[in-house]
Image (cartoon, rainbow, N blue to C red):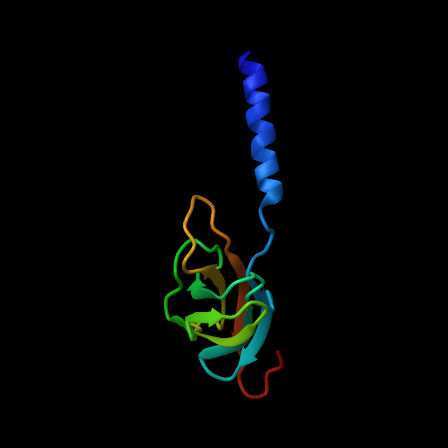
Length: 137
């Protein structure tokens, strides 16, 4: 009897998942590398809304493993409200250590107003490298 109940519950859960719309905000490009003559690097990224309603997204600079917010990094604007199907550019900017001459950060885009145990999050990585005059990169 318990096995039959488990099968019914599993089937119902699977059908409920199939009925959910599959969409997630987008971040483009997902990976990029660039050089800079200074200790600051910036990239222009696009955030898009594939949902059928207006949504607000937060854009967060993260460490490359996406475990915590990145230090000496920012995204402008860090919150965007987009109509269905709309996209908007954001700029990520981060400081690079003069000694290592290279830094990779992550950037994640998440819906602001959704709640639940599993939330959609789209992330990418961005690497900046310091080049000096006469060097190629």
